Length: 455
Figure 1 (cartoon, rainbow, N blue to C red):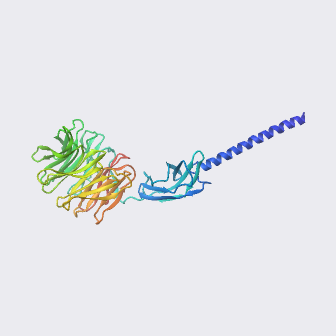
Figure 2 (spheres, one colour; figure 1 turned 45 degrees about the horizontal axis):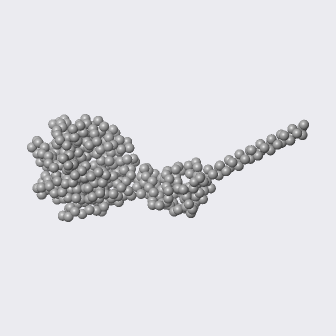
Protein backbone atom coordinates (compact mmCIF):
# COMPACT_ATOMS: atom_id res chain seq x y z
CA UNK A 1 0.00 0.00 0.00
CA UNK A 2 2.79 2.38 0.80
CA UNK A 3 4.42 1.63 -2.54
CA UNK A 4 1.12 2.19 -4.35
CA UNK A 5 0.56 5.44 -2.46
CA UNK A 6 4.07 6.57 -3.32
CA UNK A 7 3.49 5.82 -6.96
CA UNK A 8 0.19 7.64 -6.94
CA UNK A 9 1.74 10.68 -5.31
CA UNK A 10 4.64 10.50 -7.75
CA UNK A 11 2.32 10.36 -10.74
CA UNK A 12 0.36 13.34 -9.45
CA UNK A 13 3.59 15.25 -8.87
CA UNK A 14 4.76 14.54 -12.42
CA UNK A 15 1.43 15.64 -13.87
CA UNK A 16 1.56 18.80 -11.80
CA UNK A 17 5.09 19.53 -12.93
CA UNK A 18 4.05 19.02 -16.59
CA UNK A 19 1.09 21.40 -16.07
CA UNK A 20 3.34 24.02 -14.55
CA UNK A 21 5.85 23.59 -17.35
CA UNK A 22 3.12 24.02 -19.98
CA UNK A 23 1.96 27.22 -18.29
CA UNK A 24 5.51 28.54 -18.23
CA UNK A 25 5.93 27.81 -21.95
CA UNK A 26 2.60 29.41 -22.78
CA UNK A 27 3.55 32.49 -20.79
CA UNK A 28 6.89 32.67 -22.55
CA UNK A 29 5.22 32.41 -25.98
CA UNK A 30 2.70 35.11 -25.05
CA UNK A 31 5.48 37.37 -23.81
CA UNK A 32 7.35 36.87 -27.07
CA UNK A 33 4.28 37.73 -29.12
CA UNK A 34 3.64 40.89 -27.09
CA UNK A 35 7.27 41.89 -27.48
CA UNK A 36 7.14 41.37 -31.24
CA UNK A 37 3.88 43.34 -31.42
CA UNK A 38 5.48 46.25 -29.63
CA UNK A 39 2.80 46.31 -26.92
CA UNK A 40 3.13 48.64 -23.99
CA UNK A 41 3.72 52.03 -25.69
CA UNK A 42 5.63 50.85 -28.74
CA UNK A 43 8.12 48.61 -27.03
CA UNK A 44 11.05 48.29 -29.38
CA UNK A 45 13.00 45.69 -27.39
CA UNK A 46 13.99 42.87 -29.71
CA UNK A 47 12.38 44.43 -32.80
CA UNK A 48 15.04 44.99 -35.50
CA UNK A 49 15.51 48.30 -37.33
CA UNK A 50 14.51 47.42 -40.92
CA UNK A 51 13.80 50.80 -42.54
CA UNK A 52 14.72 54.48 -42.25
CA UNK A 53 12.63 57.39 -40.93
CA UNK A 54 13.05 61.09 -41.74
CA UNK A 55 11.17 63.87 -39.94
CA UNK A 56 10.96 67.42 -41.34
CA UNK A 57 9.90 70.27 -39.09
CA UNK A 58 7.43 72.39 -41.06
CA UNK A 59 5.63 74.75 -38.68
CA UNK A 60 5.24 75.40 -34.94
CA UNK A 61 2.45 72.79 -34.93
CA UNK A 62 3.34 70.40 -37.77
CA UNK A 63 6.05 67.90 -38.66
CA UNK A 64 6.18 65.77 -41.82
CA UNK A 65 7.24 62.11 -41.67
CA UNK A 66 8.63 59.97 -44.50
CA UNK A 67 10.15 56.49 -44.31
CA UNK A 68 11.50 53.80 -46.58
CA UNK A 69 9.43 50.61 -46.97
CA UNK A 70 9.93 47.64 -44.67
CA UNK A 71 11.55 44.79 -46.67
CA UNK A 72 8.50 42.56 -46.85
CA UNK A 73 4.73 42.79 -46.91
CA UNK A 74 3.06 44.64 -44.05
CA UNK A 75 -0.51 45.21 -42.92
CA UNK A 76 0.16 48.81 -41.88
CA UNK A 77 2.64 51.11 -40.19
CA UNK A 78 2.11 52.44 -36.67
CA UNK A 79 3.62 55.84 -35.86
CA UNK A 80 4.56 56.28 -32.21
CA UNK A 81 5.14 59.76 -30.86
CA UNK A 82 6.92 60.11 -27.51
CA UNK A 83 6.31 56.44 -26.76
CA UNK A 84 2.59 56.31 -27.57
CA UNK A 85 0.67 55.41 -30.72
CA UNK A 86 -0.13 58.62 -32.61
CA UNK A 87 -1.66 57.31 -35.86
CA UNK A 88 -1.60 54.46 -38.38
CA UNK A 89 -0.63 54.61 -42.06
CA UNK A 90 -1.21 52.06 -44.81
CA UNK A 91 2.06 52.71 -46.65
CA UNK A 92 5.12 54.99 -46.64
CA UNK A 93 3.83 57.00 -49.64
CA UNK A 94 3.93 60.77 -49.53
CA UNK A 95 5.00 62.68 -46.41
CA UNK A 96 2.51 62.27 -43.59
CA UNK A 97 1.65 65.39 -41.62
CA UNK A 98 1.60 65.18 -37.84
CA UNK A 99 -0.17 68.31 -36.68
CA UNK A 100 -1.88 69.93 -33.68
CA UNK A 101 1.51 69.93 -31.96
CA UNK A 102 2.80 72.55 -29.55
CA UNK A 103 5.37 75.17 -30.63
CA UNK A 104 9.00 74.87 -29.51
CA UNK A 105 8.46 71.32 -28.21
CA UNK A 106 10.51 68.16 -28.76
CA UNK A 107 8.79 65.11 -30.26
CA UNK A 108 10.43 61.69 -30.75
CA UNK A 109 9.12 59.27 -33.40
CA UNK A 110 9.47 55.55 -34.12
CA UNK A 111 7.48 53.84 -36.89
CA UNK A 112 6.62 50.13 -36.57
CA UNK A 113 5.89 47.80 -39.49
CA UNK A 114 2.93 45.61 -38.49
CA UNK A 115 1.88 42.24 -39.92
CA UNK A 116 -1.45 40.88 -38.71
CA UNK A 117 -1.70 38.80 -36.54
CA UNK A 118 1.98 38.69 -35.61
CA UNK A 119 2.28 42.37 -34.69
CA UNK A 120 5.40 44.48 -35.22
CA UNK A 121 7.98 42.75 -37.44
CA UNK A 122 10.32 45.69 -37.92
CA UNK A 123 10.79 49.29 -36.98
CA UNK A 124 12.48 52.52 -37.99
CA UNK A 125 15.23 54.39 -36.28
CA UNK A 126 14.11 56.88 -33.64
CA UNK A 127 14.09 60.56 -34.69
CA UNK A 128 13.71 63.43 -32.23
CA UNK A 129 12.97 66.96 -33.48
CA UNK A 130 11.68 70.24 -32.07
CA UNK A 131 8.81 72.21 -33.58
CA UNK A 132 9.38 75.78 -34.71
CA UNK A 133 8.82 78.63 -32.31
CA UNK A 134 6.36 81.46 -32.97
CA UNK A 135 7.41 85.08 -33.41
CA UNK A 136 8.02 86.88 -30.09
CA UNK A 137 4.84 88.93 -30.29
CA UNK A 138 2.82 89.95 -27.27
CA UNK A 139 -0.52 88.13 -27.03
CA UNK A 140 -3.43 89.23 -24.88
CA UNK A 141 -7.12 88.43 -24.47
CA UNK A 142 -9.64 91.10 -25.45
CA UNK A 143 -12.71 89.11 -24.43
CA UNK A 144 -12.69 85.68 -22.78
CA UNK A 145 -16.28 84.89 -23.76
CA UNK A 146 -16.30 85.70 -27.48
CA UNK A 147 -18.08 83.45 -29.96
CA UNK A 148 -15.71 81.36 -32.09
CA UNK A 149 -18.06 81.57 -35.08
CA UNK A 150 -18.00 84.76 -37.08
CA UNK A 151 -15.52 87.53 -37.74
CA UNK A 152 -14.22 90.62 -36.06
CA UNK A 153 -13.21 94.00 -37.41
CA UNK A 154 -10.35 96.13 -36.06
CA UNK A 155 -9.50 99.78 -36.58
CA UNK A 156 -7.16 102.29 -34.95
CA UNK A 157 -7.74 105.97 -34.21
CA UNK A 158 -5.55 109.07 -34.48
CA UNK A 159 -4.19 108.43 -30.97
CA UNK A 160 -3.21 104.86 -31.92
CA UNK A 161 -5.91 103.34 -29.73
CA UNK A 162 -7.62 100.22 -31.01
CA UNK A 163 -11.31 99.60 -31.57
CA UNK A 164 -12.87 96.26 -32.47
CA UNK A 165 -16.37 94.97 -33.18
CA UNK A 166 -17.21 91.30 -32.87
CA UNK A 167 -19.90 88.78 -32.10
CA UNK A 168 -20.62 87.19 -28.76
CA UNK A 169 -23.38 84.76 -27.84
CA UNK A 170 -25.40 87.64 -26.36
CA UNK A 171 -25.07 89.91 -29.41
CA UNK A 172 -22.81 92.39 -31.20
CA UNK A 173 -20.10 93.89 -28.98
CA UNK A 174 -17.63 96.77 -29.27
CA UNK A 175 -14.31 96.85 -27.37
CA UNK A 176 -11.53 99.43 -27.11
CA UNK A 177 -8.26 99.84 -25.23
CA UNK A 178 -8.57 103.64 -25.17
CA UNK A 179 -8.35 103.64 -21.37
CA UNK A 180 -5.32 101.36 -21.36
CA UNK A 181 -7.39 98.25 -20.65
CA UNK A 182 -9.78 96.46 -22.96
CA UNK A 183 -13.36 97.49 -22.15
CA UNK A 184 -16.33 95.82 -23.89
CA UNK A 185 -19.71 97.43 -24.52
CA UNK A 186 -22.85 95.82 -26.03
CA UNK A 187 -23.93 97.30 -29.36
CA UNK A 188 -26.96 95.19 -30.18
CA UNK A 189 -28.50 92.33 -28.27
CA UNK A 190 -28.89 90.05 -31.28
CA UNK A 191 -26.95 87.04 -32.46
CA UNK A 192 -27.17 84.78 -35.46
CA UNK A 193 -25.29 83.07 -38.23
CA UNK A 194 -25.00 86.14 -40.46
CA UNK A 195 -24.36 89.03 -38.08
CA UNK A 196 -20.60 89.36 -38.56
CA UNK A 197 -19.93 93.02 -37.75
CA UNK A 198 -17.64 95.58 -39.40
CA UNK A 199 -16.27 98.78 -37.84
CA UNK A 200 -15.20 102.28 -38.91
CA UNK A 201 -14.39 105.61 -37.26
CA UNK A 202 -15.34 109.10 -38.39
CA UNK A 203 -13.15 112.20 -38.12
CA UNK A 204 -14.63 113.04 -34.69
CA UNK A 205 -13.71 109.58 -33.36
CA UNK A 206 -17.27 108.24 -33.27
CA UNK A 207 -17.61 104.52 -33.92
CA UNK A 208 -19.77 103.05 -36.70
CA UNK A 209 -20.67 99.36 -36.86
CA UNK A 210 -22.56 97.49 -39.59
CA UNK A 211 -24.14 94.09 -39.03
CA UNK A 212 -26.98 91.83 -40.12
CA UNK A 213 -30.12 91.57 -38.00
CA UNK A 214 -30.97 87.83 -38.10
CA UNK A 215 -34.57 88.44 -37.03
CA UNK A 216 -35.45 90.66 -40.02
CA UNK A 217 -32.55 89.99 -42.39
CA UNK A 218 -31.94 93.76 -42.57
CA UNK A 219 -28.52 95.38 -42.71
CA UNK A 220 -28.12 97.62 -39.67
CA UNK A 221 -25.85 100.53 -38.84
CA UNK A 222 -25.12 101.44 -35.21
CA UNK A 223 -23.13 104.44 -33.98
CA UNK A 224 -22.20 105.97 -30.63
CA UNK A 225 -21.86 109.48 -32.10
CA UNK A 226 -24.53 110.76 -29.69
CA UNK A 227 -22.83 109.25 -26.65
CA UNK A 228 -24.86 106.06 -26.64
CA UNK A 229 -25.52 103.39 -29.26
CA UNK A 230 -28.27 104.12 -31.79
CA UNK A 231 -29.12 101.66 -34.58
CA UNK A 232 -30.89 102.25 -37.89
CA UNK A 233 -31.53 100.24 -41.06
CA UNK A 234 -29.28 100.54 -44.09
CA UNK A 235 -31.24 98.15 -46.30
CA UNK A 236 -34.02 95.60 -45.87
CA UNK A 237 -31.49 92.83 -46.57
CA UNK A 238 -27.75 92.60 -46.11
CA UNK A 239 -25.05 90.06 -45.22
CA UNK A 240 -21.24 89.98 -45.09
CA UNK A 241 -20.98 93.75 -44.79
CA UNK A 242 -18.03 96.13 -44.67
CA UNK A 243 -18.14 99.78 -43.65
CA UNK A 244 -15.92 102.84 -44.18
CA UNK A 245 -16.08 106.58 -43.48
CA UNK A 246 -14.44 109.05 -45.88
CA UNK A 247 -12.69 112.35 -45.15
CA UNK A 248 -15.94 114.35 -45.21
CA UNK A 249 -17.72 111.84 -42.94
CA UNK A 250 -19.85 110.18 -45.57
CA UNK A 251 -20.52 106.57 -44.55
CA UNK A 252 -20.10 103.79 -47.12
CA UNK A 253 -21.25 100.18 -46.79
CA UNK A 254 -20.80 97.16 -49.04
CA UNK A 255 -22.81 93.97 -48.55
CA UNK A 256 -24.59 91.04 -50.16
CA UNK A 257 -28.31 91.67 -50.70
CA UNK A 258 -31.02 89.20 -51.64
CA UNK A 259 -32.51 89.92 -55.06
CA UNK A 260 -35.14 88.22 -57.20
CA UNK A 261 -32.56 85.93 -58.83
CA UNK A 262 -29.92 85.46 -56.14
CA UNK A 263 -27.69 87.29 -53.71
CA UNK A 264 -25.79 90.16 -55.35
CA UNK A 265 -23.26 92.77 -54.37
CA UNK A 266 -24.81 95.96 -53.07
CA UNK A 267 -23.48 99.29 -51.92
CA UNK A 268 -25.04 102.04 -49.82
CA UNK A 269 -23.98 105.63 -49.13
CA UNK A 270 -25.12 107.89 -46.30
CA UNK A 271 -24.26 111.54 -46.93
CA UNK A 272 -27.33 113.60 -45.99
CA UNK A 273 -28.71 111.53 -43.11
CA UNK A 274 -30.33 109.00 -45.42
CA UNK A 275 -28.94 105.75 -46.76
CA UNK A 276 -29.05 105.29 -50.55
CA UNK A 277 -28.66 101.59 -51.46
CA UNK A 278 -27.93 100.33 -54.97
CA UNK A 279 -27.22 97.00 -56.64
CA UNK A 280 -23.77 96.59 -58.19
CA UNK A 281 -23.49 94.55 -61.37
CA UNK A 282 -21.50 91.37 -60.92
CA UNK A 283 -21.76 87.70 -60.01
CA UNK A 284 -24.57 86.18 -57.99
CA UNK A 285 -24.10 84.14 -54.82
CA UNK A 286 -22.12 86.85 -53.01
CA UNK A 287 -21.12 85.73 -49.51
CA UNK A 288 -18.69 88.38 -48.26
CA UNK A 289 -17.33 91.84 -49.01
CA UNK A 290 -14.38 94.08 -48.13
CA UNK A 291 -14.43 97.84 -48.67
CA UNK A 292 -11.95 100.71 -49.07
CA UNK A 293 -12.61 104.34 -50.00
CA UNK A 294 -10.07 106.50 -51.85
CA UNK A 295 -9.21 110.16 -51.24
CA UNK A 296 -11.88 111.24 -53.72
CA UNK A 297 -14.55 109.31 -51.84
CA UNK A 298 -14.92 106.54 -54.44
CA UNK A 299 -15.64 103.01 -53.23
CA UNK A 300 -13.44 99.99 -54.01
CA UNK A 301 -14.89 96.59 -53.11
CA UNK A 302 -13.30 93.14 -53.04
CA UNK A 303 -15.93 90.44 -52.77
CA UNK A 304 -16.40 86.70 -53.07
CA UNK A 305 -19.20 84.82 -54.82
CA UNK A 306 -19.88 81.14 -54.39
CA UNK A 307 -19.90 78.48 -51.69
CA UNK A 308 -17.01 76.23 -50.70
CA UNK A 309 -14.96 77.54 -53.61
CA UNK A 310 -15.55 81.14 -54.62
CA UNK A 311 -14.72 83.66 -57.31
CA UNK A 312 -12.79 86.67 -56.03
CA UNK A 313 -13.92 89.87 -57.73
CA UNK A 314 -13.23 93.60 -57.57
CA UNK A 315 -15.77 96.36 -58.15
CA UNK A 316 -15.18 100.10 -58.14
CA UNK A 317 -17.04 103.29 -58.93
CA UNK A 318 -13.89 105.40 -59.29
CA UNK A 319 -14.72 106.21 -62.90
CA UNK A 320 -18.29 107.28 -62.11
CA UNK A 321 -19.97 103.97 -62.97
CA UNK A 322 -19.46 100.52 -61.53
CA UNK A 323 -16.77 98.37 -63.15
CA UNK A 324 -16.56 94.74 -62.05
CA UNK A 325 -13.44 92.57 -62.60
CA UNK A 326 -12.79 88.88 -61.99
CA UNK A 327 -9.59 88.43 -59.97
CA UNK A 328 -9.55 84.66 -59.40
CA UNK A 329 -11.72 81.56 -59.74
CA UNK A 330 -11.87 78.54 -57.43
CA UNK A 331 -10.49 80.47 -54.48
CA UNK A 332 -11.28 80.53 -50.80
CA UNK A 333 -14.44 82.39 -49.84
CA UNK A 334 -12.70 85.36 -48.27
CA UNK A 335 -10.88 88.46 -49.53
CA UNK A 336 -9.46 91.69 -48.14
CA UNK A 337 -8.56 95.00 -49.77
CA UNK A 338 -6.49 98.08 -49.04
CA UNK A 339 -5.67 101.04 -51.29
CA UNK A 340 -2.26 102.44 -52.12
CA UNK A 341 -1.44 106.15 -52.02
CA UNK A 342 -2.54 106.49 -55.65
CA UNK A 343 -5.85 104.75 -55.03
CA UNK A 344 -4.83 101.46 -56.64
CA UNK A 345 -6.12 98.25 -55.09
CA UNK A 346 -4.18 95.61 -53.18
CA UNK A 347 -6.20 92.41 -52.60
CA UNK A 348 -5.34 89.21 -50.74
CA UNK A 349 -7.14 85.87 -50.73
CA UNK A 350 -6.45 82.15 -50.31
CA UNK A 351 -6.41 79.89 -53.37
CA UNK A 352 -5.87 76.20 -52.66
CA UNK A 353 -2.42 75.93 -51.01
CA UNK A 354 -1.42 79.55 -51.68
CA UNK A 355 -1.87 82.92 -50.05
CA UNK A 356 -2.41 85.12 -53.10
CA UNK A 357 -1.86 88.83 -53.65
CA UNK A 358 -3.30 90.80 -56.57
CA UNK A 359 -2.80 94.47 -57.45
CA UNK A 360 -3.48 96.84 -60.31
CA UNK A 361 -0.82 99.31 -59.11
CA UNK A 362 1.00 99.05 -62.46
CA UNK A 363 -2.19 99.68 -64.44
CA UNK A 364 -2.78 95.98 -65.17
CA UNK A 365 -3.66 93.27 -62.70
CA UNK A 366 -0.66 91.28 -61.43
CA UNK A 367 -1.11 88.24 -59.18
CA UNK A 368 1.57 86.44 -57.15
CA UNK A 369 1.77 83.84 -54.38
CA UNK A 370 2.98 85.16 -51.03
CA UNK A 371 3.10 81.84 -49.20
CA UNK A 372 2.83 78.19 -50.26
CA UNK A 373 1.27 75.97 -47.60
CA UNK A 374 1.40 72.18 -47.16
CA UNK A 375 -2.36 71.93 -47.51
CA UNK A 376 -5.40 74.10 -48.20
CA UNK A 377 -5.40 77.25 -46.10
CA UNK A 378 -8.41 78.83 -44.43
CA UNK A 379 -10.12 81.74 -46.25
CA UNK A 380 -9.72 84.24 -43.38
CA UNK A 381 -7.42 87.04 -44.61
CA UNK A 382 -6.84 90.71 -43.82
CA UNK A 383 -4.54 93.43 -45.13
CA UNK A 384 -3.30 96.87 -44.08
CA UNK A 385 -0.82 99.45 -45.40
CA UNK A 386 1.58 101.46 -43.27
CA UNK A 387 2.68 105.07 -43.77
CA UNK A 388 5.66 104.02 -45.90
CA UNK A 389 3.44 102.02 -48.26
CA UNK A 390 4.49 98.57 -46.99
CA UNK A 391 1.77 95.93 -46.81
CA UNK A 392 0.87 93.72 -43.86
CA UNK A 393 -1.28 90.57 -44.19
CA UNK A 394 -2.96 88.37 -41.60
CA UNK A 395 -4.07 84.84 -42.54
CA UNK A 396 -4.50 81.22 -41.36
CA UNK A 397 -2.50 78.23 -42.52
CA UNK A 398 -3.65 74.64 -43.07
CA UNK A 399 -3.51 73.89 -39.34
CA UNK A 400 -5.60 76.94 -38.32
CA UNK A 401 -2.50 78.73 -37.01
CA UNK A 402 -2.28 82.52 -37.24
CA UNK A 403 0.33 83.75 -39.73
CA UNK A 404 1.53 87.18 -40.82
CA UNK A 405 3.22 88.29 -44.05
CA UNK A 406 4.81 91.62 -44.90
CA UNK A 407 7.05 93.28 -47.48
CA UNK A 408 8.18 95.96 -45.01
CA UNK A 409 11.82 94.89 -45.41
CA UNK A 410 11.60 94.58 -49.22
CA UNK A 411 10.94 90.93 -50.14
CA UNK A 412 7.87 89.25 -48.70
CA UNK A 413 8.53 87.45 -45.41
CA UNK A 414 6.16 85.25 -43.39
CA UNK A 415 5.92 84.62 -39.64
CA UNK A 416 3.91 82.43 -37.28
CA UNK A 417 2.21 84.49 -34.59
CA UNK A 418 0.07 82.01 -32.59
CA UNK A 419 -0.04 78.22 -32.97
CA UNK A 420 -1.63 76.75 -29.87
CA UNK A 421 -5.10 75.64 -30.92
CA UNK A 422 -7.66 76.58 -33.57
CA UNK A 423 -6.67 80.18 -34.20
CA UNK A 424 -6.90 83.14 -36.55
CA UNK A 425 -10.56 83.08 -37.54
CA UNK A 426 -11.81 86.50 -38.62
CA UNK A 427 -8.36 88.06 -38.27
CA UNK A 428 -8.09 91.81 -38.81
CA UNK A 429 -4.76 93.67 -39.08
CA UNK A 430 -3.95 97.36 -38.51
CA UNK A 431 -0.75 99.42 -38.30
CA UNK A 432 -0.25 102.23 -35.79
CA UNK A 433 1.62 105.44 -36.58
CA UNK A 434 4.74 104.09 -34.83
CA UNK A 435 4.79 101.15 -37.25
CA UNK A 436 3.58 98.61 -34.70
CA UNK A 437 1.47 95.78 -36.10
CA UNK A 438 -1.79 94.76 -34.43
CA UNK A 439 -3.97 91.75 -35.25
CA UNK A 440 -7.31 90.89 -33.65
CA UNK A 441 -8.41 87.27 -34.08
CA UNK A 442 -10.48 84.47 -32.58
CA UNK A 443 -9.07 81.63 -30.52
CA UNK A 444 -11.78 79.04 -31.23
CA UNK A 445 -10.20 76.49 -28.89
CA UNK A 446 -10.75 78.74 -25.88
CA UNK A 447 -13.60 80.88 -27.37
CA UNK A 448 -11.60 84.07 -26.85
CA UNK A 449 -11.07 87.20 -28.88
CA UNK A 450 -7.34 87.96 -28.84
CA UNK A 451 -4.95 90.73 -29.78
CA UNK A 452 -1.42 90.17 -31.03
CA UNK A 453 1.18 92.90 -31.48
CA UNK A 454 4.88 93.03 -32.31
CA UNK A 455 5.47 95.82 -29.76
